[in-house]
Length: 107
Image (tube, rainbow, N blue to C red; front, side, top):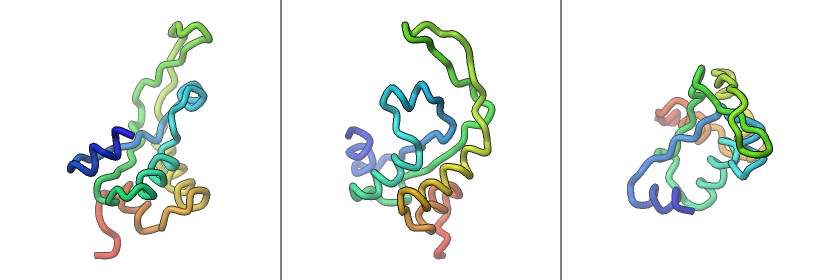
């Protein structure tokens, strides 16, 4: 995965927690799953963040990839992704907190 190589070269990835069913159905990983995957592959937790992109426009497409409308990114998706990372994907609490606060809770 290019993102993992990017992080190992010093980059940072921000996972958007606001997503659509369309995006998930077309191969996008939910932010919580992507966070867990990258941590499992050895990416340092300080190089992974999650943000809601609240109120951002999220395009919706039909079966023929025609734009049919927009959804609005929700701030509450950040809390949901945090909970999902810890409860469903077994991301340690401190690593999940670090991803949404951008600080190390152990310091």
